[in-house]
Image (cartoon, rainbow, N blue to C red; front, side):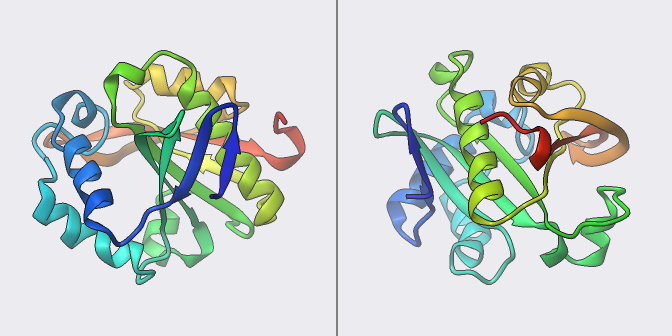
Length: 190
């Protein structure tokens, strides 16, 4: 377990059919896909295994995790050390220096858990883990500018918008603008 507090827990994703089935359930749900990957880009089980198994097995710098509310799996979060990414991926963040900076991405896969403050607890949990256990000095996230619910969550956690990333991610057939949002170790909430 990476984190456990107030009924929220985060654990590493396992190379296990159950974890892959959860991901396939979430990443074929149109409500989730509207904000993560795109409704035109579902991930049925075969594609989940093909995409996530190498990540779970450590062949990729991304660390995949599942998170739970009261022991019920409800979402996915991943983190990565920006220096471990290929140069072309690091350049997308438009940061001069990426030393000790981690990125995160997440979604709540069970839409009945949206708008309950759970995302805030998960984000704070992973941010504190990255600061305390991995010695991160900054954590970045890059939400689509239209995802106002996520942006509000990240701002509640202490992230600030630092840069608009024009045409940053392909989503539903169109390159979308994203915000680069950052939280500093010195300014983080505990």
